[in-house]
Amino acid sequence: MYDKMFSEDVGSFFRSPVREIFKRVDLNAIYSFAGGYPSADTFPLEEIRQTMSEVIGKYGGQAFQYGATQGVMQLREAVADRYGVPVERVQITSSSQQGIDVCTRVLVDPGDVILTSSPSYLGALQSFRSYRADIRGVAHLTGIDAFCRAYEDTIAGVKAEGKKIKFLYMIPDFQNPSGESLTLEERKILVALARKYGFLIVEDSPYRELRYEGEPVPTMYSIDPDVVIHLGSFSKIFAPGFRLGWAIAHPDILDKIYVCKQSLDLCPPVFDQYVAAEFLRSGRLDANLSASIELYKGKRDLLLSLLEQYMPSGVRWTHPEGGLFLFLTMPEGFDAVKFYDKALDAGVAYVAGEFFHPDGSGKNTMRMNFSFMSRQRIVEGVKLLADLLSREL
Ligand SMILES: Cc1ncc(COP(=O)(O)O)c(C=O)c1O
Image 1 (tube, rainbow, N blue to C red):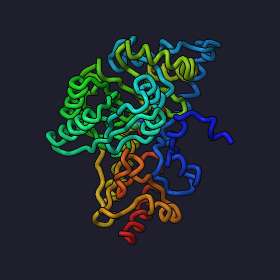
Image 2 (image 1 turned 90 degrees about the vertical axis):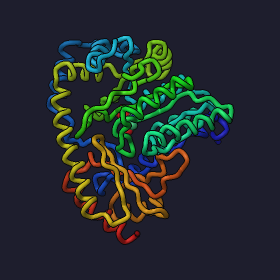
Image 3 (image 1 turned 135 degrees about the horizontal axis):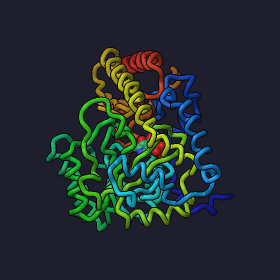
Image 4 (image 1 turned 180 degrees about the vertical axis):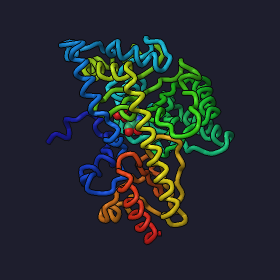
């Protein structure tokens, strides 16, 4: 009876297959490589309790009042100092998922093209589709010439159709789902393409500070601060339950985001922002982050060595230098969606890679998370999955 009452946008909504998995099973009852959850061991409960009490002592009722739409000044300044940007360029968001959504809302009309890597982050694809964007995925080809040509060809194709590219959405650091990063040269090429063809780049970087080896690569924002909107998040470096992130961009872009956010949520969660600001300023965030990096590095190394030891031949995987995921490729013909029920019946979960490919390709791929489960459960889970795959392949 309600069908005729919904907006046209609603017809483009699609459910997250990851969240559907969570509805079907109790994550703690199975071996779950599926979600992107941080380990609850990284949440510094005692320090959070102490900081909350300090915030109430320092700010009283103001900590529970409505706040500025741009975010509370203490947090904007702390973020600006941490990343070396002017405070006028910092907007606090109710997490980076909102950052993605709000960018799409202010930049895209139905039918406009959004370029992204293929695979790409599922939550972003959900947001893009909900605004009826035309999503074009570009495979990450190796070799700088091939990389560049893949983007140039896609852009030329879009132009030939008379369509408009509004922005390129990229996760340059330890991508979700692949775990891979863009080199400096690749970042420079994409920024140059944005300048050449007149589109913006939304650089989504929630995993940037979870680096386990190698040197940080400059952000795309630092290469050209006027064509890049940089999105960050406290979810993976602090705790996702606070639902806090930030957008760094040219003030003219932020102004539109600011007005849009007035209608979305008036302001980001005020108490949470004061807590995050105190956490940053006191150095507690960095101390906790160092411990989280140690923990995750160990889990990544463990998962890589287990895959080496137990996976049947023909299975390949990425070697991420950071982040929370790696990506498996099985031989052609394998279907990770079909295999999923068998895996779940046996008690192990992953996310099928095709959900991350805008064109539905990547059927023989899967994403594995290594942050959520304990080391012991990672061992048991990999043995189980490898055994199932050995019988299937
Ligand atoms: C690439 C990417 N962007 C954004 C998000 C959303 O994070 P949050 O909204 O918690 O900041 C995620 C979450 O997993 C992600 O992987």
